[in-house]
Image 1 (tube, helix red, strand yellow):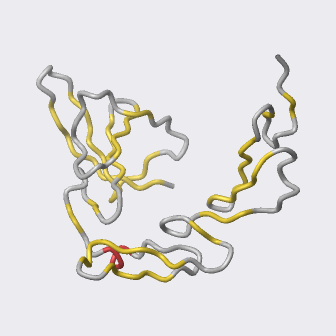
Image 2 (cartoon, one colour):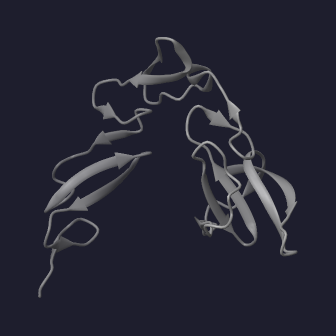
Length: 151
């Protein structure tokens, strides 16, 4: 479940939108989030603006948090490293850091790991959050890269 806080914002063209962040009210996990139109410049510090049903969500990049990604935090205080990764602060800037991932995991916050190579017939397998995904080689498609594309 995604947890969100709601704040009301009135745009100059008179439409009321709800600004949401990752703090207090639940939003349905099957909500269809889309990229905001370019004129919605509400997210700061390279936050990604998403919207659904008249609501806006700022998905913040590390080490930022807040409704509009306005708060800069100490990188390791956010506990960003997953799957047994160790957080290391970059020298001279405690708001930046990196995760040293446990064996078999990788990515900025150790979210990813390779999965069984037999899972994808003609592609690479990657496990994200416990779910397997196939990235098909050129010329193949399908959930397990088992369908040859024909011209």
